[in-house]
Image (cartoon, rainbow, N blue to C red; front, side):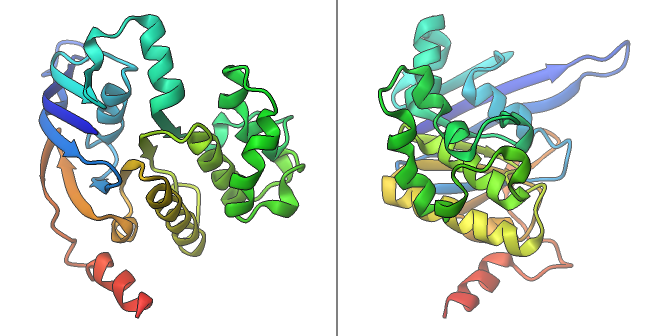
Length: 239
């Protein structure tokens, strides 16, 4: 579903050495797989997701989504990729403040001129536990509820690949686990591949596979010695 090969993106600030945000990253994700990309702030996670989504071009390397090299897409084809193939879980600032939960969740459907957009997205909001909150404006929703609306927005078109950049960055531990559990379960149900970028060592426990990104390089995940491996903790809670 997703393959990157030797992706490179460097930035130069002033006369200093270049910032190697992404430095030769190769990664593959299969249909239905939930992969976490763990690393501290500034490690290159957001840049990598931007390259995958085609929001900025790499200096070199390749991104292939659903069998297509995105470098060869024209503007219209890229827009279709973002609408129908990719689901991007944004942050609370991406919600329209004056719109209701159901209106925000239906934005992608509305952009495609889908008839009955709000009606079609309601079952998804119900799955996310927002049955009683659908008509509430953004300002009346908790941070956890806003994040669920963003998940609904990303999944409204049944995407094949979901990119989530720090989706629990504004949440406490309890609500982080609730949101990640819902994201994982809904994507498994729809057989959507997921790439989750996070600096939260507890969040990786929801993934099938974990990679670590440090200084632009991808490597095997090594849990911090200060924490138990969160994947073990989640497994123990499930038993």
